[in-house]
Amino acid sequence: MNILIKNGLIVNAGESVRADLYIEEDKIKAVASNITSNADEAIDAEGMYVLPGAIDPHTHISMEAGEITTKDDFKSGTAAAACGGITTILDFPEPAEGETLLDCIERKHKLAQGEAAVDYSFHPSITRSSSELIEEVERAIRDYGTPTFKIYMAYDIRADDLTILKVLQKTAKYGGLVMVHAENHSIIEFMTHKLANEGRTDLRYHPESRPSVAEEEAVSRAIKLAELTGAGLYIVHLSTRDALAKIREARARGVRVFAETCPQYLLLTEEKYELKGFEPAKYIISPPLRTARDNSALWNGIKSGDIQVAATDHCPFDFKGMKDRYGKKDFRKVPNGVPGVETLLMLLHSEGVVKGKISLGKMVEILSTNPARIFGLKEKGALLPGKDADVVVFDPGREFTIDHRKLHMNVDYNPYKGFKITGMPHLVYSRGRLVAKWEGKKMQFVGNPGWGRFVRRSIN
Ligand code: URP
Ligand code: ZN
Ligand code: ZN
Image 1: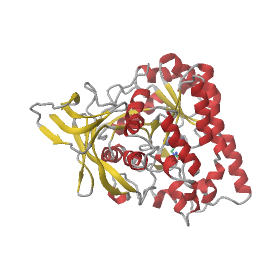
Image 2 (image 1 turned 90 degrees about the vertical axis):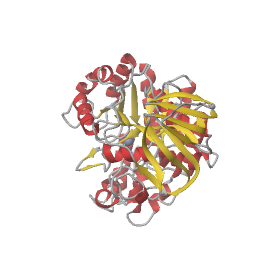
Image 3 (image 1 turned 180 degrees about the horizontal axis):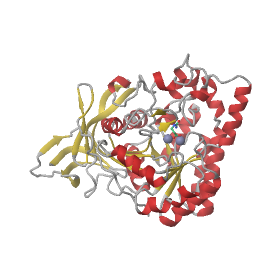
């Protein structure tokens, strides 16, 4: 099917132009003024933006966490993504005890095949300090098309510094990138024991158990390890001003370190932990929510280019039945994570572009162009001839109030409930196929499970 999108504002990272965009089958064929063609369908996008589909490089779909599993599987998670204008997700295969890295990638493939409605790829995770997992890095890069690896510096699945060094060495050698969850585990353990000894285990103490210095130290250490090996490094879900300062310093001296932040660290603060009853559980995440000063430092980091990507860390657990499963009065017992894959673009536009914190071009840069470039998604991330026709026709004036009942994520609450959004997707295309559209005051999923394809990647 050939589609002509006429008269929209075509937004790429560098520039926006009023033009037409012509899609032939699954690819963008032309971007120019006054295209005349016999398209099967012509869309009038007057007054609308035409954006490259957003890429969310940080989701936890069907992630097992002890006895529970994140609520979105590939079917619901990618339908929600499509409704939010996200046309590619990158998820984390996490080897269980005794499972190999490659078997784990295969297992995740089986979960996604026939289910995903938008394209997807994987970052295998090194979930323990194991030479077997490290040995598999080369094949994951060469044979599996998954050259980006997640390493946790905290949690039970953390890897030690020696493991981090060895994986960095391999990614430098074979062409890959290490992504780190950077929090100092010992600081967290120390603070958690201290709080417990003082009887301070109520939910409000969650941020005190994971202080900003835990992140700053781990970011700083990860950078030093990367520097030693000459490898690139990507910091996931950056939350603090002080850790950002370490990244800025490292970049200034030429270290190839990238940083990602998320809407929760740009828009919410630790005041949420003072809410009554069990409400703070909705915001129990790691790293925790920080201060307004951190929020604004992160916006500035995006503006200055020190933060290159906005992702979601989509990790949905129901408020009832999951967040409360192990107890309601102890922060240590609440599963960590918030849902977010569907609200990324609307929040960045409404809270970022509309409120003057970032430009439209910068929004496209951090949601599409940079993740495509950093993660080796060569066919994605820009509205240019030859690229995949992952396209969002976006109505910048459309209003919407966030409420989980009007969204498609399979979870019973939303951390941004009540946020008044200005600007919503109108039509969302994945490789030329309509997968979501605005209808009846909300987005409707009109795609098909199984349409989404695995994207093999390579990094130079
Ligand atoms: O609290 C969070 N962020 N949960 C998801 C797992 C992770 O650390 O990314
Ligand atoms: Zn993490
Ligand atoms: Zn995560």
